[in-house]
Length: 274
Image (cartoon, rainbow, N blue to C red):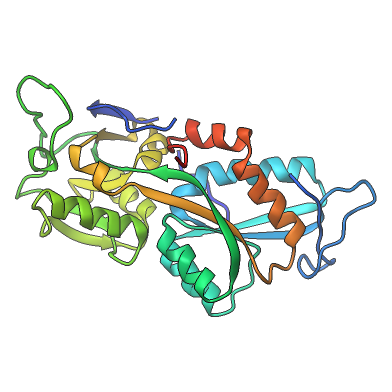
């Protein structure tokens, strides 16, 4: 369930950058936790996380597993709304990390998460294929960050996340602010699906997070735009109230919130939580 996609070449503007515990599970890889004799974590830790967290959370999982050889970390990456829906339907998990506060509030209201902490923020950028088929031309003079209206033209095919997904809600907000609410041609399940369409040249442009631009490396070009400040998503993380492996879950959350975790997030393009 854990995957690793790929520092992106920024074609214009400035990048809007921001920069453990113990427990265990039974032999089947789940259930209640119990520490090993040396105090290490054991069993299975199941994390549900927004797709945009793929790369950095993979690193956190590997670190916990290296520090706790008897622990296996399984992470499901998808759109936050989809993951929240699965948890509401009873899917077993220990940790939920959402790409916006609305999906976490949904679980808190249902009593599925006791408390959550915002650990990062993430603005959007406009990604285009390296070939740049539409030949985006920045405003003359190149001063300042351009508006989306200067980047998206009527003949471009544009991909965004579905409206119910945090990246889709943010995309709708920035497009509305630019007077481009009718610009999207395709709606994807999560931000990594948008990124993939851009990388494959299946669309002329897509709205993705700054962190996705980092992960894509030189496989895309990316442009900052002035409206992005209208919708900067905050990412909360929390332990599920009925987590099968609560001590390992808290260790994962503690790692995310730690100085080292925050540095890893900053290196991946995420902004600090405040």
